[in-house]
Image 1 (cartoon, rainbow, N blue to C red):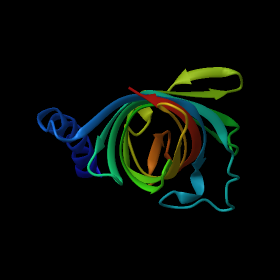
Image 2: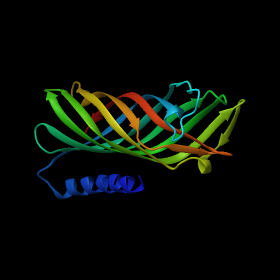
Image 3: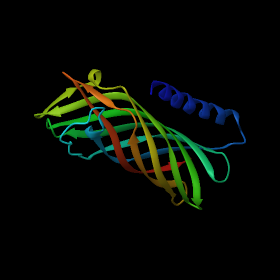
Length: 200
């Protein structure tokens, strides 16, 4: 997983630098912001709990910048940099979590219709902060929380008037995220989100 994380970061940088050198590639910068609903799926732990843990969806948000690289009339590569807040809850101990990441997706978009695209790609997240709330007390748990998250993204985008767009995405976590306590409490992320943005 660490090697994949390095590959995603280097790919982001390579695409941006290549676009600057290749004047024939159509480039567009943009911004994107939206809301997400995420869950900590504790049933996907390396050793799943018994009985199964109830999945609880919690709202969060994302905001960031992107670069569009038009390879041809149908295919676009889009590296992004975003601040993403994901939330979850462990009902077994009645504890809620707020985890903030620097998100680095590399999205491939394929034009299906004139203004409609399907999209997919990997996303690497670097931990910025992590907090838990239990019994109305909030505690920082950055040092107890896995620093990396790697996910796959699937979704769609609809281009609106002028340079505005709206998109919807599904996120599936690939690696186990551990929160260290007397033992390790593991989960995998899952999320859905909708966002709006514009290109310049």
